[in-house]
Image (tube, rainbow, N blue to C red):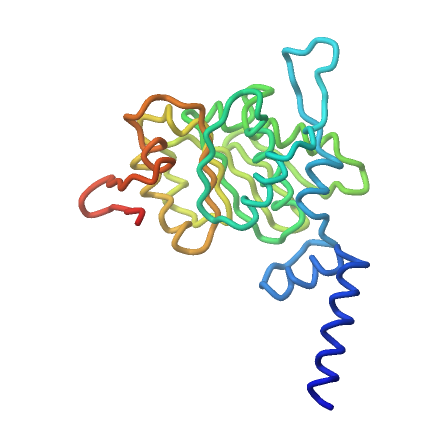
Length: 249
């Protein structure tokens, strides 16, 4: 009888999850040790339901949604599962906007997240231009519904978007920033990694994040074969130094 009762409880739990999927997401988050700031909107619902992007090349319709395409859905699913993700991109993919938005979702809905946006120069990672990484996150945030927004502030030195209510931070840095060695991040977005001349050294500095269970997403347009991004994307062994290496099996 005990086994039958346990089986009945599992069936009821599955039925409840089907009827109320967001409740199931929050229960799972609690089980996994995450501490949601409030009821969690799924990553897909956030991306396709609330995210607006800026396309300065489109004079007639510069503000637009991320299109609900199959490859974007798959990238979201993979990002949620894989801790180390390499994505070869093209401009039409909207990959930068997508992964900026996913990290913004993480910062807003989960407490105590420390997130790095990395680019070749800090100006490209921070708030210096409308298309720098942190500026994109702020653009998305400003176009969210008012009832979804939480208290925040921004700073240019250092380049940060900080959410006061849940102690989460998005920090824009250059490839050779000392901050990469000082903090173990929850998530890192490394943009245009194939064009970073110090990518091996910075990747070595990020190893504690990978070892500690953090998420590292590296995206780039192709730039030949003589760079770390190509080696990682092609699953080739690499070494920054003999004493500080990270070998893919």
